[in-house]
Length: 144
Image (tube, rainbow, N blue to C red; front, side, top):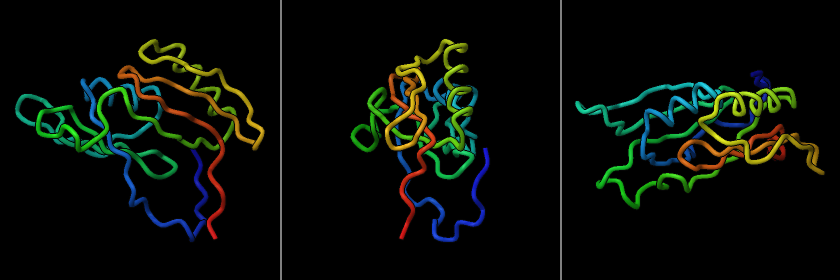
């Protein structure tokens, strides 16, 4: 996935969407293997419970997540209630992601790839936990 290295206006991400998962290792595997996220770090306890993980999006940004536990109730979005928009550089990348979701079987393609009236090529995916990931080519409006 290409990034525009000439953009000097966009600072490094300082807003991190966060979510809890009923089965963090399984969700992290889906996000890496099917969606294309890159695992940066995962802190687990002796029982293998993921207390904190960071997954980067190759073009920039990322998410923080962990296992749903009694001590994090109310602090993060619970399993199955998260939604995000993720940018891919080209329509072919969106179509390839949709094909991976169809072939993989762990998630669900909620919307077949389609073109929007504002020039994006989008699709929507529900991950194994029930979270919805809208994916498209619209990178947002340019910053002033």
